[in-house]
Image (tube, rainbow, N blue to C red; front, side, top):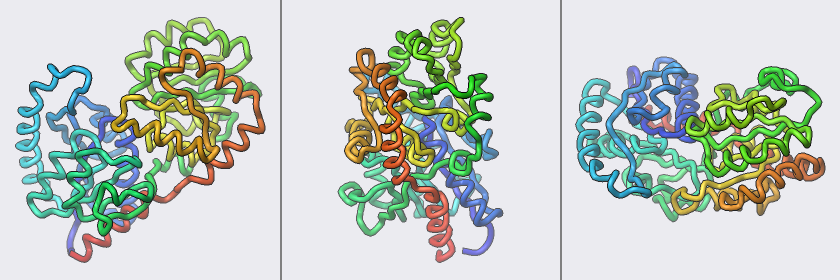
Length: 367
């Protein structure tokens, strides 16, 4: 293919979809600076804010996912889907993409479906070890499906699969922040044990409630806390931490590399992208899987690491009784920390974004 390449990247909804997408976009631009990239996301979702912050253009479409908790909320879904296809058609007419990359999230389905109907090359990145239904459907006609682990041929045609690992944002892979610098960033003391608690970009109620109920235990143990709550829980967290020394809390952390550098121990959900980042930063982790993930894949993810002695796990339903106790025990157990660090670090993949970008450009150049 001669001339300037134009690529659409579709998907989002959570940091676990958005940050790998941005990593792939950056890797494409590094290989060929003339590539034009357009992101398509869901209106009102965090990609509409995070993608422009990374220097890329994003267009929003009216799309929502199936709401498992309230069937009445799904009444408008067919209309939204039809409307989103019209919006996608218009965007394709204006942008004229040579290829489309889907990273998961509601908005990737109509975009990839439309591209496949038009005979445009489509690429999928499936970060989880259990593929989502829309990706399985789209995978049948995809040009290539990039996956994190082996054994994915039960979801996708074997001939289309390429094992790449999961792309981790370069700010984390290339981070050179010292622990002292990181602690200063959060206004915390050096020389004190520090725990970083994150429920992902949108927060995690089970984790947040358990932490809020036991803040005094951290203070009594002389352990500092960096606590990313997500927007819904932020006011409660601020109230709970009021007047407490050594507790830093906010709804979102833009510079995750600082939080990782400051932490001795991390508490995290076990989405595929969170795990990919934790492998790179080599931190001892207590995983609390999100119990409502499709096919309970977060528990599967966490259990895989527990089996490799690369992490500990507390079930979401046990957070109130067990989470803080498990975390404080780990903080005080240096040898277990070292063992977990060593095993989780061995699983790190540092260049998935480059591998994916090279493969996409190689295929487009042959067309």
